[in-house]
Amino acid sequence: MDPLAARLRTFAEERDWQQFHTPKNLAMALAGEVGELLAEFQWLTPEQSAQVMCEPEAGARVKAEIGDVMIYLTRLADVLGIDLVEAALAKLDEVATRYPVEQAKGSAAKR
Ligand SMILES: [Mg+2]
Image 1: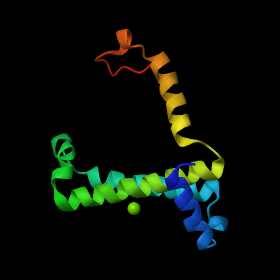
Image 2: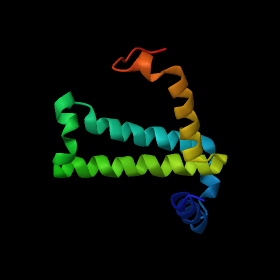
Image 3: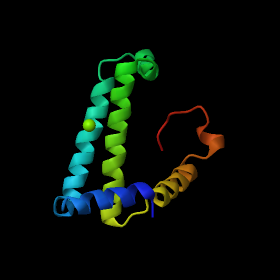
Image 4: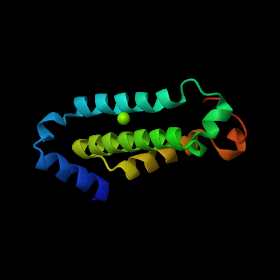
């Protein structure tokens, strides 16, 4: 088992929080944290966004929000019995088939 998923499961069990960790609640919490991450980039230019980790305070906030997103995504996947890495690899295989290198290289066109 993923050590992060295991630690989050223990964290929830110790606090008797599994009762609150329904898929619905976790999906909503995940969306909320993604919103907090987006807020860090909201008014930045593309160039500023690419340099955000060079700004100590903004970079620390982005890192913290990425951590929140990872926590809720990992916990949601665990509660649903989904292997996160396996799910991502399966999705990547699907996308690779839809976007073969010879047809997709250098193109952002959707298929
Ligand atoms: Mg947050």
